[in-house]
Structure formats: C-alpha cells, structure tokens
Length: 481
Figure 1 (cartoon, rainbow, N blue to C red):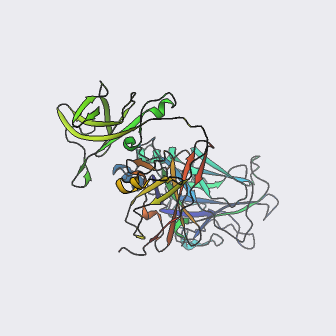
Figure 2 (figure 1 turned 180 degrees about the vertical axis):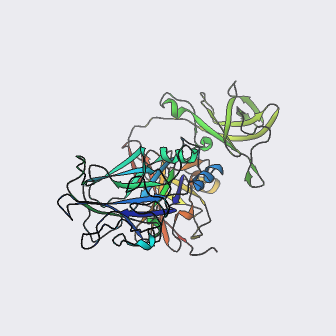
Figure 3 (figure 1 turned 90 degrees about the horizontal axis):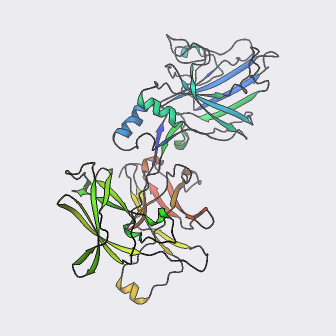
C-alpha cells in the first residue's frame, strides 16, 4: 500500500487578540494542549483600525520520515508526494468564507506549551511559544512568528468548512536532505486577508473569524494533523496478462512486464551474484513434450526493482500460445516459468463489462500490526462455464488493468482511506498471475470498529472510475490477539 501517515509532534495557536474588555492583548496566551487550532483576522473591534490575528504552528518529526525511507517503507525523492492535512473542526462561532490560507516554513525553533485557551493571557505558560516569544529565552524576530520566504503554499476556502490539504513535497524533501532545518509549518490567512493597523494596503478591512482545525490532542483518531506520504506502488506483473504485439494496440499495451521474486526461507532476498545488477531473460516456445525453440533471438535485459525482486519488459510478435521464460546470468540459470499467451481482438459492440468480485482471503478480524495482502477474484457477470470447465479446471480471474479501492468505517461512513485515483494513484491495485491485489496497512485505521472495502475499476470507454457493487467487511480488534 502506498500510503503512510505521520502525526504532528508539536502544535500551538498564537494570537495577539484582545482580552475581554478590549484593553489588553493576550499576546502571552498559549494553547499547546488545546484540542483545536485556529486562525483568524478581526478588524476594527477595539478601534476603527485595530487588527487582531491568530496563527497556527505545527511541527512533525522528520526523523520518522527519514527512517521510513532508510528502511524502504518510503520511496526515494521524486517518487513520493507529501501532503499536509488539517481537518476542519466544527464550531458555533462565525466561520469565514471565501478566503485563502498560506503555509510557510517556520524559520526558528519554538516550544509547544501547556496552555488550553487562546482567550486567556496565560502568563504561567508564557515561557513557551506565543505571539511574541518562541520560548522562555527567545523572542520571535517578528511578532507572530518567523517564517522563511519560500517555499509558500496556499489553499483557497469557499465555504470555510473545508479541510486543509496542501502538497508540501518540496519542503519535506528539504527537511529530509538537511538543506533546511525542520521547525514546522506556520498556517495563517494570506496577507490580503489578514487585517492590518499599520497602513499596509494589502491588509484586509473585513473580519475572517474563525477557521478551526483539530489539533494533535483531539480524541478523534482520524482528525489529527498529519503529513501523508502518497505514491503509486502498484506492480503490474503480466505473467497472467501476456499479450502478443498487435496493430490494434498502442505501443505501451504491446509491452509486457514480467517479474521474478526470489524468496529464501520465506523472505525476499537479493540473488547474491546479481545484487542490484542486471539479469537476463530468454523466451522459448514449447513445441511439445520437452522440446523448446527460442522465440526471441536476443535476451531481454532485466533489472533490480527492490529487495529480491527483478523485472524485465518484452514485446513479442508471432503466433505463440505458450512460452517459457528462463532467467539467468552467465551460465547460471535461476528460474524457468510458464506463460500463457493471449492475442488482442477487435469487437463489434462497445458494451462495458459488468463484473462479479470477491476478496477470497479476507478475514473477519485483524489487528493493527497486520498488513494483509488482499487478493481480488474478478469475473464477468455474464460468464457461463460449461460443466466440463467447472469439473476440470480452476476458474481464472479477470485481471483489471486499472483498479482502485477505498476503506470506510461502517458505523458512520467515515472515509478512512479514500480512493487515490488522482496524480499519485496511492490506492491503485497491483496484479500478478493470481489476479489484482493490494496491501492494507491496518495501523491506518482506528481499532474497535468494523470497516468496509469498496472497489472501483477504470472504464476506458467513458473515462471514469466505476465503483463496484460489492461491500467487503472486516473488523479491527481493540487489542492484539
């Protein structure tokens, strides 16, 4: 599964809003332990040109992200996107509409604090971050926090009830590489929406009060601030989906990718004499019995994918029905497999297939430490086997080239893992000779609830994703079992 979430390690709301009575600003207030974060701009409440602002600070432990990359749980830079997610917190107070928030990198260290209320000038917590100070010993260079001028990210809000979801990949990669020190994010209204009492022409002359998000202290499992890593980890092994080259298909569909998985005592291991180098593949036609003839004069050059996994891509013309693929290097042969060959054919109707699906290895109960591989069996709904077929062969699954999944909580429909069918394709399924599959990280889900898996297949005719009718249920245990 190509989705990993990292929860915030620090957060706070800092403000220069006036206390009750509108005489003293609560610049020493701290809400590091509040269950919400908020940003606002209030214009002309204390006087005809007064400005009151609130900003959000959020920091994540990038050592966790770096460690995940070192262990191979995250791909290299350029192959993964990072998104900052903050989740809307409903409030009885007025919610601003039609505004923009900016996200900037904080440029100096700060302390979270133990305060819970931004409306109180909590001097007992003024040794932590607030509007004027980053910590007990250090003041901000500029009140309201110090921020790098670049990069700057932004998101517009129409109703004011939206979540914040911003692609912050460039900044996170800077933190990981050490070219910029990680002091977290500052989130606040852009300059044209923040009120100004200093004559700044870009300052707002209207109030935007108040946009709230849940903090890391919230009781809601799925609502904490996160950095979400997303990438396409789908592996398309065409051993069960091998097609001969045809004028009916574009070049990309005439190419078949084959994989070799080197399991040693149940674990993937690099082939010692190859390591991360090249491996070669010869294709042979089966003539009958043990007789073979080479189908391609020049061997395909395969390469390293990840620990113990190698792949090669081939394009083959001819009239073959069965092939054997031989993986080797030098005089050492590592594996011989069998491939059933298919051919493309045109149709006289444009009806889209309707499928029947089943996750055959789904268990009723899981725990949070598990990462099960879910295999999806698919066949056309109108498939009608003969008695001979049922009695004498294993029914083959239909491989779907573009399939995705989502997971939602059964009790209230909350979407714990949405379809990742955008540019990152983080929920795109893999396939091999056994059919489509995906790995589901159970620690992304809140224990103690029942969840539902839904599937969607891409329809090339309508250029849309079509959700399948089946619902696959499982429960996540409260404790390890």
